[in-house]
Image 1 (cartoon, rainbow, N blue to C red):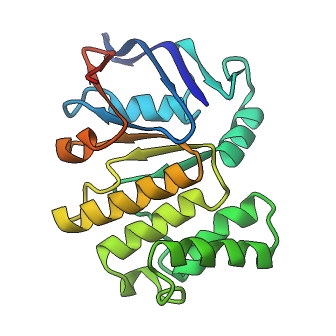
Image 2: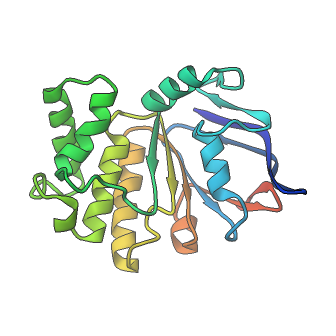
Image 3: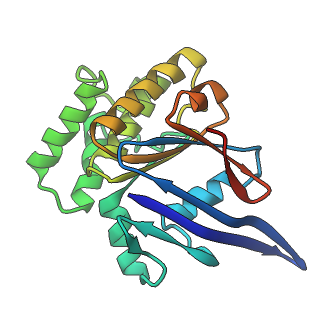
Length: 223
């Protein structure tokens, strides 16, 4: 589903060049959940941004379902990202003026889905995540765990093939983090999504299908 092929990336600050990634490679199959761990500053977020087509790697390639993204223009990358990817972040970034259901409907509108179909999909996902009784509640009326479950529903609203999550439970207490993580993994596996989840929580990381560490600019698979 997803192939990361020997990507390298660096940033320039004044006269200094910071080599962040140096020949990273990884394959992720549909329905597989891969943990991405590494020290703060190791480049996990940079790697996810490149894999998510938000930036272009300076060398190497990202392949989605066998398709190279190296030569895609900005419009093509945006369309591929919109219809193929879902993103979950540490902070939910929900729109405060909209209800839980409306927050999940919005990305579907952007993808051209009709209002009724978007509403049906939003209700289905939120009910699956245990929020059927909170559809009309706005973010400030929800707990942290509930807000993050809405963010997960939003990420899955357009039936992505690939899910990228950057510390999706990092802002939650351990009990809530475990509950939210379990729901996320179940949905990913049920829908055959290829997922990379960056986390500092090694207990959660070891419960995933595979465990890779980003160290010294390279990916090292632990099991």
